[in-house]
Image 1 (cartoon, one colour):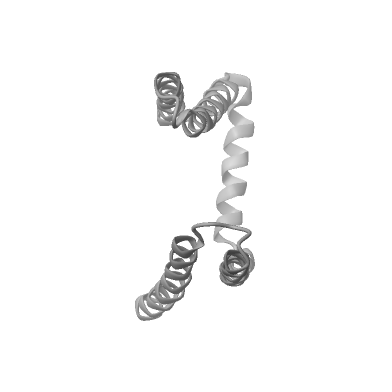
Image 2 (cartoon, rainbow, N blue to C red):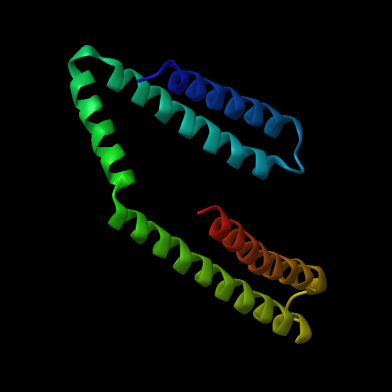
Length: 146
């Protein structure tokens, strides 16, 4: 494994520790920084352990074989098409969830169950249309490129 994997693992651990320190200093946003600390520490420790696991001389052959298999999988046309379709279905799913969530929040706000729903609905609406427009723009750009 490359040293950059070790460096990124250590950097994530450092970021996690920094977020943990900030969490103890500020009580108002403590939960946010505790979550970020857990994410940084967990990912950093996992990355560092992976580096030391695959760097042992007796595992280098298996690591090279694993990387060669990953390269073949990433270049396989059928799997590339499947990844594309999966991404497309998730894009559609996200649009549907955004629309339904926006509608549900609006309805709950109208009946007084939720307060301050106006800005949530505006944000979700902007996100919905931004995703539609960005998807169309990226499709056109990729169509011209390839």
